[in-house]
Length: 87
Image (tube, rainbow, N blue to C red):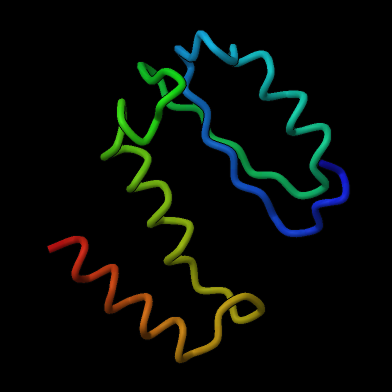
C-alpha cells in the first residue's frame, strides 16, 4: 500500500463485522496520503447498507474545487453529471 502515491479515500462502516474498525488504522498508517471517514450504523457493504450517506460523501469529494486536480472542462462536465444525479 505504501507505493500508492495518489490520495486515498477510505470509508469504513463502524458496524463492519468482516473487517472491524480497528483495521482502519492499519490502512491509515500504510498509505502516504489518506483521508478516512467512518459511518455509524453501517457494516461492510456501505454501498448497499448506507447508499445515501456514502454517495453524499463521494459527491462531496468529487465536487471539491482544486485546480491541481481538476481542469475546467472536466470540472464543468462533472458538475453537469452531479446536477443530473441530484435531481
